Amino acid sequence: MPFPPSARQPLTRVRVARVTTALVLALGCTLGVALSVGSVSIPFNEIVRALVGDPGLSSSTKAIILDIRLPRVLLAIIVGGGLSVAGVAFQAILRNPLAEPYILGISSGGTVGAMLAIGLAFGGLFMLPVSSFLGALIVTILVYRLAHRHGRLDSTALLLSGIMVGAFVNAIILLFAALFNQEMRHTLLWLLGNLSTANLSQVVVVLPVVLMSAGILFFLAPQFNLIATGDETAEQLGVDVARLRRLSYLLGSLMTGAVVSVSGVIGFVGLIIPHICRLTLGPDHRLLFPASFLFGGIFLLWADVISRTVIAPTEIPVGVITAAIGAPLFVYLLRRG
Image (cartoon, rainbow, N blue to C red; front, side):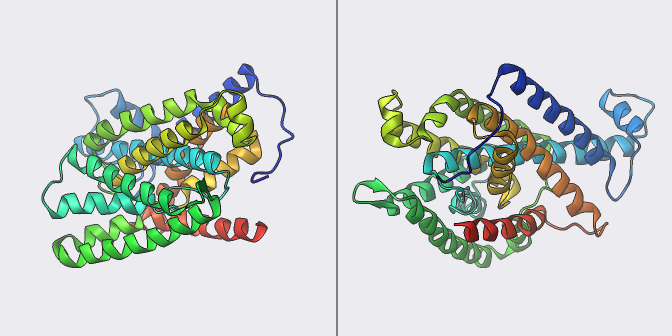
């Protein structure tokens, strides 16, 4: 089996409600902390006053909370949740615990698409995520084709193909950085993963894409549970396995492309979070999808808090924090086979 068996209690609506409520409360608390801390600490009562539009609050405090930190923390939730859900989907359909957008090269493909749009002056509110999605989709199709052997999908070959294609695409990214040298610093931040340029326009564009894609995957959760038993068994139980895989690749690429267009390459979130949720909550995708989305948002919020406070006022790109946590876990999973 690719995943450890679960001895957790059977899933019920009450358990789903309890876990979801607990994670929503944890997300709310983390959101409050993320809005409060930074190069300038802001008390919680002033955060509440800013959110409710208190006219007596100073304009500088309002600007810090509403124009700088609020878009950033909302984007962190969206990016963390989207990457985590994509990781759950990829690991399920490939039955490989190491599958996730970063390792499969999909994040790098999205970055190439976004950088090409910027370099050719096609960047914009909607063109950037569209270009990023197309780049992610092209890499997904390429990796998928390379991993087919004798008419069957080899999950190990898929993982190796993703790493190989990702390395090649990263070379293209560096080439673009050299050609469009005026964007060099922005490119470097993009390669390392960065949320410092977040704004509400990005949130408005990316949020519907992530919520729609995650919602469809959650609706298909029972089919993901069946496919875990094997393709033949799932097909006998009425699951169109090939269609589910194609749709999952499409939705995973769509989410990855959307979040990469605003955050750059943030690796290992789609690897870490699904494993933590699977080991603590069990493998049932009816709970795994929403729990991974919420916990992914919590995780990236804390990573972002660390990135902008550990050596304040200088910021560490958030992708560096997630890689520092995710890379050792990746090695550990490889050693476990």
